[in-house]
Length: 211
Image 1 (tube, rainbow, N blue to C red):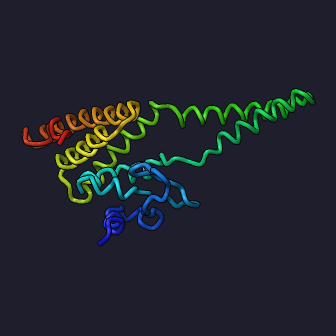
Image 2: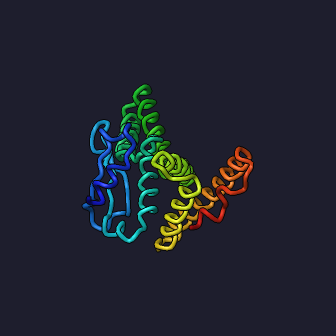
């Protein structure tokens, strides 16, 4: 069974009819990414050359992270904002010339909305929070597919540690380190909850996150 077929088997039933998995075809692609390919259809693209160097458990959790992004509706959208911003600004300048107040307000409103959307898309804090939420969803998905809670945290933590070590750019490395720190805190909360429920300390520890 090929790796892409194996990953298709890791899709939750509710996503199987409209989420597709393909090998990345771009030059120097990211390890794994999402792309909308049509109305209500999403493709998970994987650079198999980089992917093959990861442990299988690490692959699984990184894959479920992307599924988590889909389920959280944080898929990157087409870059319509730049076009809308250009149209709005162009319209505003034109309406200043002809002095049509209503059309000027509409053009300014379009520019403002597009600018706000661009701000959200490029806001590093929002991207981090979206990724942390997808990490939490990945843990839940791993448990649905038979992982214990400690092993789910350990596998995702190991995967993030791999990404930290392989990242050449400081900004990207910091991004993964921040996710790893958030995962450690989440693991501590999970440990405390399991300990209180089971009356035992033999659950998730913060060290588990680092593999």
